[in-house]
Image (tube, rainbow, N blue to C red; front, side):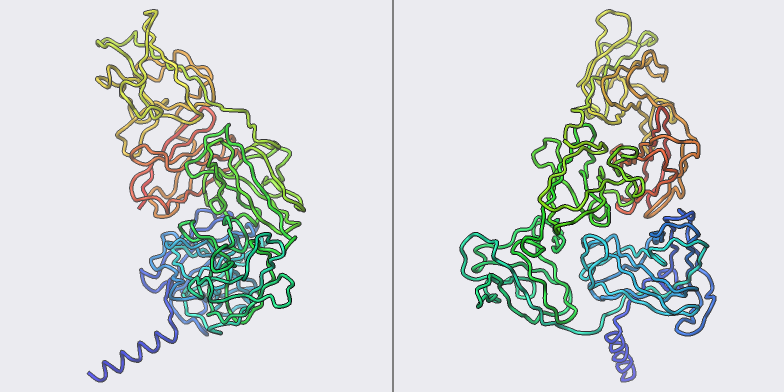
Length: 622
């Protein structure tokens, strides 16, 4: 019994000292996975788990992983886990992510934490690798701010995805093979607290007050625990506090919360809680520090900030349920990080960003929050697009408060985007070949909730062609003709050229895309058109694209026919026929990665339309 207790004590001591969790070591099924490449000619393929090619020094384990960065790869080429990690990166219990690497030449490793299950921001840091032709361990500290927007640390969150970059920022002229192993999280070391000097410039504040305070997570958000002092009367209030290391939130307040700083969440120095209700200044403590003097309610010195207001018109497009976003340029993060809003419903999406005077950046707009930029606007060839920078927009150094008014996917200087592009669509069906009896023909579809009697057709002239006209917004719709409130409805076979099939195979409906006034006429229960003007009734073409794998947990790849050189619309439907993802792709896109990680398990239908052709394929999210 004593031996057991002694052994337990040793285990607990070692665990407490090292606080290490293994994510991947390739020695057991639970700590093994492959990584899928992106950003190079290896897109869609995965790396290899192999026997250790150099079992010496700090790594004598049996199995390791390789990573190939081929010649001409993008500077940001990397790889993500597929299948998903079974052990997440827990940055609540630990603060460092470490990896053992074997480099043939000096470079760096980029470690990106994504897919936080606790609402944490995506986080990326780089670490140099100076030792070559030998195993070495390198670590990144999650307490440090990310090098990408929103520039927040990763501590306090759990991440399901660890994406790796080898020699980030470099495009090699020849193929380079790296090896890696033992991806782990560890407890950090170093200082446990720091003396932090806070200063706020109140010279621009016009309202009367007695005392400025600093209130934050380190003092329980007390309104009067830590007053600042302005004994010399220069308008700059200061105090020094001892604060534990780690990530904190705070703001400057006045007279025990009589007034406080108010941020909108788009500032560079703030952090937004997952509910979006609280926006505070961000503080990362790793030792003693004197914070720069900032203007009250600003991330910058007084007089050194400008406000950039975006006004984005959307009357000419169908806005994603996720909304519109500004993204890219190294300053506005990924789609989803910086949302625009249309609270008044006027079709103009807005946001205001405080930035330092002289700020300039590339940027783009996205219709939805697509991590792979597949919903990015396409302004190629227009005068505001920079072909050398992904056809993004840009603005020059901003020296004063500025409003940028434009339209999604249009280079304009106002928000008048061509008005409402809804169309009057006339539905016609030729019933002259129908031999049964009926009273009234109806059209039912996704535009009317598949109601059985909402949209009756008429045949006033008795020629056997029934019709009605409905005003529809631009979009792709499913529909069919039916008789007497679903007494009889059209029945199509899977793959009929004017139809789309839901993933379950249970429902096969007609499909049309609306972009303005149009008329569509079909013979009952056939794809034979009696009249088509102004509406795109796609022709089925199974060769348009392929998918691999068709059973996936997090990601799958869509590969387009090499002869398909036109703009494409890619949609993903669940088994109830609900649209869950929509991507607008340019003519030059030859393959597309679909992120499935946020979807529930089950079957989905991938629908592609390019010009007057369409195709569908089924996939299964595991």
